[in-house]
Length: 119
Image 1: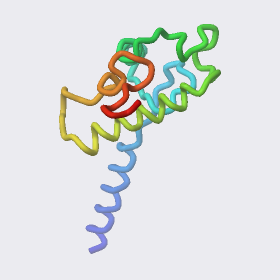
Image 2: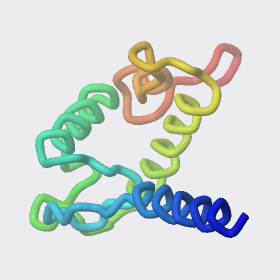
Image 3: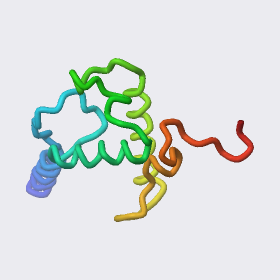
């Protein structure tokens, strides 16, 4: 009985240890929702935001300090990315595409498009 308990405890500790994601310091500052594997992945995500929202980097970022939160767009973007992540993980079971992205609501515009009947 003691051996089974000890084995279970050891297994639980091992699983807990390996589930912990130790973020690699890639030199990025102020990333709270996005967890890119590398700079190339972060650039792909940012390029997708540009295309799907019809904006350039400076719409959200200060080009002299990319991490500086000088407007409320950071908070909104984090909330929306969290929403998209939730939709894709909790409401759909797609392993690959199609996935919900910004373009579904934004349609290439900075503000989400109005639903029918909205003014």
